[in-house]
Image 1 (cartoon, rainbow, N blue to C red):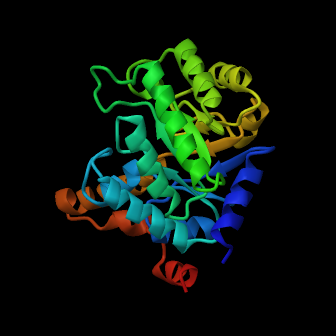
Image 2: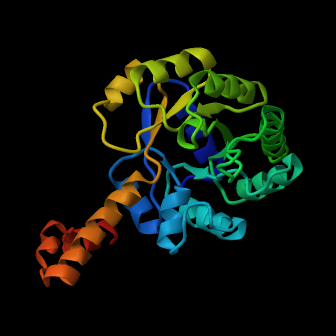
Length: 271
């Protein structure tokens, strides 16, 4: 098992060139399965984990999320990035404390978003949003500086799909110390290319959260460095579960098990 420092340095190297996929498991089993498939790094999903606890996205407490992140980080040999939502606080000094605690879990990276939790005013005012990123940067630096910080601008998935605003925010987060930039919800080649160009040379994370004609090669050609899937793998698993359960409940049919993973294969994977 690599040390925490080795994982963090590996994670940083991955961001230096090329393009890689960072899939999002939601428990130890899915994390270990993805590692065995050959993925070089993983990221937690706040949504996927929340659903596994019978909660809506954004309803998990900081303490529960910290325990989850620590468990996933310890369960695999590859670096793990924490989907750390908004840092579980509004004030910059409280974000800093949350980030300090997250660094202690053994993560290689973490993200801080600018969503307020209130769709009536979904994004923090820019000055406060920047101060929150700066506070996160300071907490990481005081912890040794090896954890990679991703600054997220949430407008495209929170009812404010303004490309110019997203770019302005991402550039400000880079200036405040974010190592990687991320605007979930970008859906076109033009949007991705515009963000990549605007924040260069900082690496950009691209979310692929649903069906798309874009491939990994396409996103690499557009300059994307990192591709995550958010809660999409968890939603895919829930989709199979729901369809099969409905067949049993509504039709008394067990035909949905035809696509189930073989138990022997799973046992072999986790042996």
